[in-house]
Image 1 (cartoon, chains in turn cyan, purple):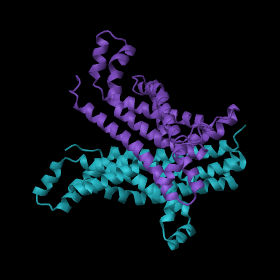
Image 2 (cartoon, each protein chain N blue to C red):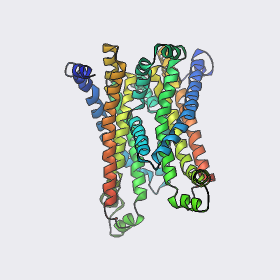
Image 3 (cartoon, each protein chain N blue to C red):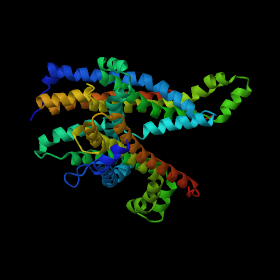
Image 4 (cartoon, rainbow over the protein chains, first blue to last red):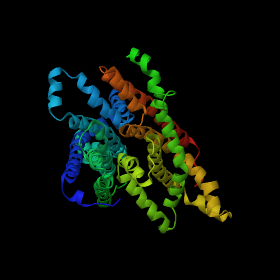
Length: 230
Length: 230
């Protein structure tokens, strides 16, 4: 057994792996774009002054967080299309259903985790900050926008970035419904050629590099914008 | 839905057992529990090494933690399942493969819990134990670790929740844990995917939400204790 780097440099296996890598990146970026607003909405619900809102937010978080991502993916891929009307189902099946279902599941799963990070960011800002802003004559919205959010963001960006690392790693689970991302393609190369060493080395380096780059960004952000205690 | 549960509850719980290998929900719970218990000694050792005053010991462990946390569990699962047999010549079963991977991940995460607990403990604890004549090992064993583990208990329970969720990834290598069994039931029944996967999600929810409430209650109880000498 020896390591044959040529299959990673060109040819069909190389193409499969690179395609997989780009789909993984796309899944991460698209899911992030849905997860962040969803997470922010849930976080606002959870810190709301109205009790039913808080309860609804908590229910969403607990219901999604306590079920493994794999079960989410199975549900969205195998069960959800059955709930759709005939016409909508056809549209889904005609447009890469694996990727669409993966994005739905990943966005919801990453979203509730991000909601918790944003919520702890909001809670890290002392209530007196908001009270002081209000008593200085700022309106509710202005106080939240100019005083609360800038401070809350400082505290929540590093955990949000580490949540993004999790999202990046979690895209690998989309293999289960046949989304042709990196893990899927690595397994495909393994099946087609038994070159598991090369295929998995490629996948390992790709996952490692992207994860470590995002972690480094989190570290740099923390240095540049340290949380200031009021 | 009731009829579905009535027909398949035993299969869902234990898989083909006793005619075939143990599977289903029982396998999920047993594997997760076993992985966490087996990971404990290694997690403790790595955690202690992580906060070691000697950089030659703490740095390699820190690097190992970074690397393991930067790659998806599924990738490590693929390495062990497809590549390891090619090296050792012995085909490892799905359950053994899953257990090994879970032990590796759990020990890394437990190490972080132990290290965080040891850092949070006031330095005076170790210093006074040492000045009373205890060696480093004895001071750790009798003074530092008991307190660290008690404070870390909620995190350890949460790690069990993560492990249960991670066990679902065994599905991808054909481990007959509960998600796999649910998909088998779905294939047998064929037309009731929504119900099957809702039952699966609900099962995970009850298990994981229950455990995370337990972790929350433990945390509250620990907080109510009078402050430890600091």
